[in-house]
Length: 342
Image 1 (cartoon, one colour):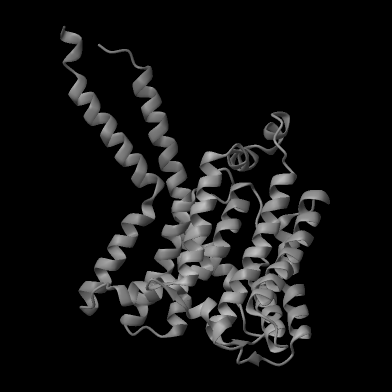
Image 2 (cartoon, rainbow, N blue to C red):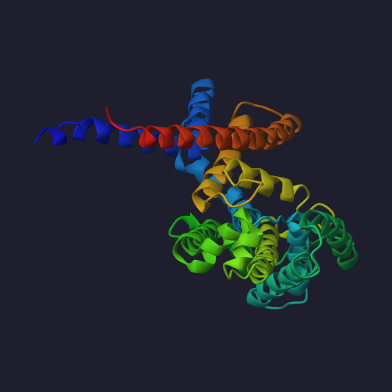
């Protein structure tokens, strides 16, 4: 009879452990709330749908590309070429539209061009076994040069039908935001509900052990690189449609750093094997709200760049600190469970 007495304290302890574990896994949520609170207190501006809509629209392009990049990082790889691939996709779409083709054909051409870059990255990293960091860093420069050769002068004025992709709304929600939400949702379901999704984590944790377990350690990253390139091509199309211009020299400059910052802020471990699409969403929102907050505070673009760089450093520091803290909490919990009740 007396054995049922400690049930409530144990339930409370479990609840606290779960809450602590959630906060440790998602420290950026706390910072996100603090950021919004600070900006509102400092400027008197309230976070309304107008502001949030702008943040979501700006972040949608980052989110679309951050999803496959995050999956690659989870698997132990990286793609630094997405900024130049975005530029290539945008210029290809702009060129197709400039010749009077339908918007759908422009989108398909841009996605195909991005996937082609992803194919090169995939072959060099997963088949040839070269470092993904070196390969994609080299492709970052090579693709940028190829894009400028393809379109030395900016293209513009692509028509309202094409512009809808970048600035159009469905039921009051920007189409780009709907696309980003779909990509995030489908990727999250893939990672958590399918064997192939779980294999992504297994490859990142221990590639050799995953191979011995029958995981296709080359095929999965290969497909992810194709996904990353295609997503960057689509993002380039959306960007050009929104700008109604395709400046090859300026399009996507520094975009890869924004994507990587969002990924790392979202809790994706650079060491691989850890992270979620929910974290990526929070990382994208944090970057967007940070930029919006700095603008409301009257901070110049130069200082905003400083803040973005510091955010990247902070992301790595938070990831390292969170990893250590989680290890200590797990060790403490294991010790508690191993201690026999008195």
